Image 1 (tube, rainbow, N blue to C red):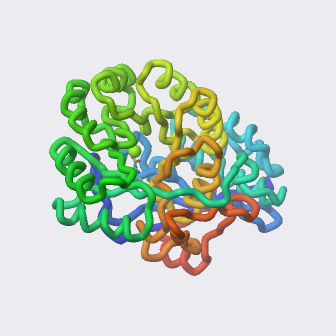
Image 2 (cartoon, rainbow, N blue to C red):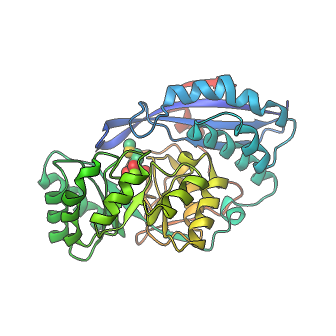
Amino acid sequence: MTISFQIHSLEIPLVRPFRTSFGSQSVRDVVLVEAVSDSGVSGWGECVTMAWPGYSAEYTSGAIDVMQKFLIPTLEPLLETSPEPDAVRSALSVMQGHPMAKSALSTALLDLWLKERETSLANYLGAVKDKVDCGVSVGIPSSIDSLLEEVGSYVDQGYKRIKLKIEPGWDIDAVRQVRNAWPEMLLQVDANQAYERTDGAHLAQLDQYDLLLIEQPLPEDDFLGHAMISREVNTPICLDESILSVASAQGAIEFGATTIINIKPGRVGGYLTAKEIHDLCVGQDIPVWCGGMLETGIGRAANLALAALPGFVLPGDTSASNRYYAEDVTQPFVLDNGQLPVPSKPGIGIEPIPENLEAMRTAVVKA
Ligand code: SMG
Ligand code: MG
């Protein structure tokens, strides 16, 4: 076998705790997958699982387990030479679920494959921009005062769109206060599945605040519930957790469960499927935007390439590195006029800084 994998586990403190409707975190458990070729070239991918299955069913130690026990052995016959991206995806498709683990492995192999071809991920995917507009996601804080302080600091930094995390008890008033303070700001909310089918009338109170969208109010499997909420609320409903494949995107659109889609490569098994969902949405006039999973520079770099495709017409959760990390494992991405640059070097266009990787690493396994 000419390609082998190293799975690096890192712990990086967050600049401030990030609370959503499903829990709070103050440290990011990061998994970086490195695909190492015989010739000493490495490709990198980030596994965006959380430490616990709060956002979705996947979680970090489970992702490492499934990679080691099932996904890497499944790929083994392909690793004599750098495999074609499509061959990687179809080999992994014999195993159910685990899109984040699959995405990490396939992105590491894709990075390597693109480096051999001296092509950037952005070019490969069909990017049309060299900078992308950035939004920022604001966790649920302890008070309205700290919410306004945090939003104010992002507005001052130049972010082009603010997303507020909401949950029952932290929604209408928080949005009202932010909207009053910044009447013109592009503003949206994300519930991470915290509401129920009967909450349509309650969520309709948000209509008066001119939001871009309400993200994922109901559980991930509830297309009918989202269609019901869409009929009661004028603000567009945008699905995140529910969109796991091209088929689920198509179904959600046809069903009236969503009119805008958040695309996260980790959630859909990698960048090939992310691009296909993008293409589907362009064909159906469904705006898309790039989600975020508190990525380090590795995942962020690849997301910026995706966010440069033509259908990404809304600012993404592609914030600067310092939104989450005082120090990143790569060179940091720095906001410039509300935008980040799309990496142009071969592959994802960035690598860990060896000293940072070592300092942040809690474990590394060869697989
Ligand atoms: O990377 O800026 C980021 C995170 C953006 O809010 C964000 N992500 O549901 O969209 C989402 C959440 C998922 C992660 S929350 C722990
Ligand atoms: Mg979301």
